[in-house]
Length: 86
Image (tube, rainbow, N blue to C red; front, side, top):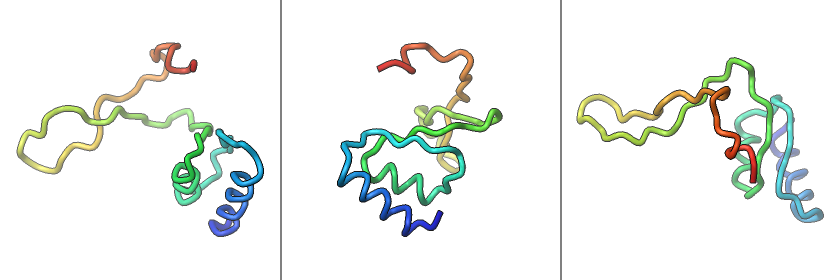
């Protein structure tokens, strides 16, 4: 979808409806995803079965090389059920 068209649709949705969540399939590009997140909506989408999810890095920088971006890998099969409930 054209990012300008998507931005227009997003503004109409926010202006007309009391929208909190936007559910889309995995076809969106990164530009559209960023627009959704910047608008304050909660974005719900599917993931590929082989998606690699990582916790943010919380350790201390060791002084050599680039700063780490990723922490431990997330195992979705061992996630606590409380994470999925509000």
